[in-house]
Length: 267
Image (cartoon, rainbow, N blue to C red; front, side, top):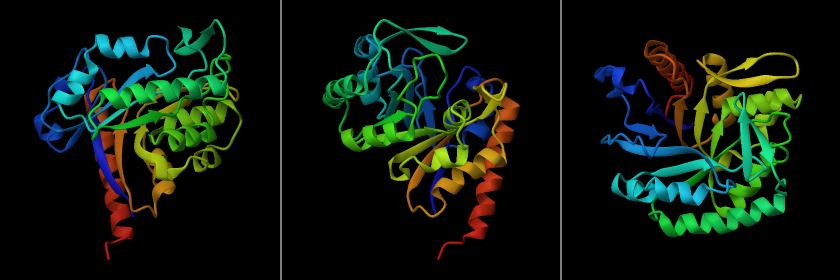
């Protein structure tokens, strides 16, 4: 059975969390280089930057990302690959492309160049991973939200996958696919980490990534993907709006995992 490591995301209300709660976590996930919190724990980092963005490299250098990664021994650095434009504008938390659309060949060329650049900059023991993007029908998400796209990128460039369950569910709903079947199409051997939250379905044509509290339904979806895997996975609950509900969600995850351990006792 899988080894699941609950990870506490560092967010704006982190300082309001009680010490007896934060001390339960051996790993934290940071999100901002310019607001980095030096915490003496195993650390992974997920950036909202996209590799295809024109300013990807410049922004990382301006934020002294590589100095921080080296100084604090960050174990994994992850980021986005899409959308399929190097320049975008954002409306209602969705990308809209500006200028020419990138082809898959264009994206692979950027991956080859910029991942090589990252490997030259990063410590050898810092893993590189990418996160799946959620699909919206704006023209900026074409071809870069499908599991096959991520499987191919991860295999070709030896990357891990941060599987955002809500992003996958949004993509499945907005493309009128089964969430379960969509999730099964990801190569689970590439998965290193899960991001968990609950989506909001606004209509039969539109779901959004609401970052609402996940519950047993999301825990079960995640677990079914990796139930018979011997690998280790980091799991972050991505809810940033209040501390007490976040703590309750991690408690619920702990209960869920304990139940699964009882169902599958160690040999």
